[in-house]
Image (cartoon, rainbow over all chains, first blue to last red; front, side, top):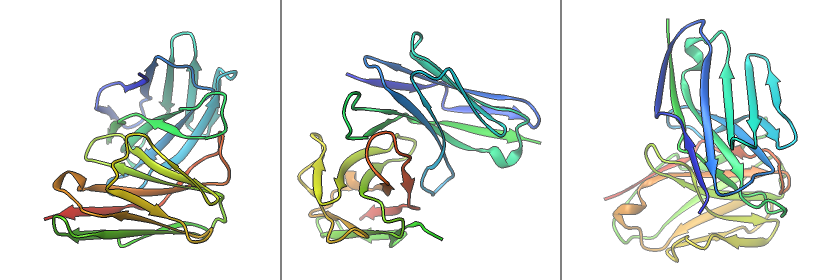
Length: 115
Length: 113
């Protein structure tokens, strides 16, 4: 069955450093992958989408890579700030080749950026 | 601002007492989703509507039902809540299926006593 793993449940880094979060998947080949941010007690908020034919996507201080050979996506936050502290979820399309648009979510990595 | 609204934000019910959670959207999106998220777990898709077309997940318990009376509203009915149904329930929308971004509401935290 399909499986999504996000590295470590928690990641603590110092302000100004680059945070790197990992999403690994097995047993399927998604056509795209999305990253969401979730704050405590709130719904996830979309950040970035990357397709299988794209190696890298950037948005301001965020960068996502997608390696379909390694079955892995990396999510980077450069010049991290305490306000970046949240849980980050990766989500992959479940229905490759179909238009259903359902997502499998990972459990998330809780990022804490300390001053 | 266009958004996804969930009411109530917190719901307490008794074991076995039916409960309904509501979701409304001003985005005029075709697709509405219901997810269950337990503490430190991944959001789990329960079902979704593509317009009026209902799509149930194979592992969603029969205890969970949904209604979408119009484009803007969607309801989640839990017929006989058990202690294991305590969770955050998230409603999301997307303009269309495929790779569209999903827009989430703030969630309803359900407590079962």
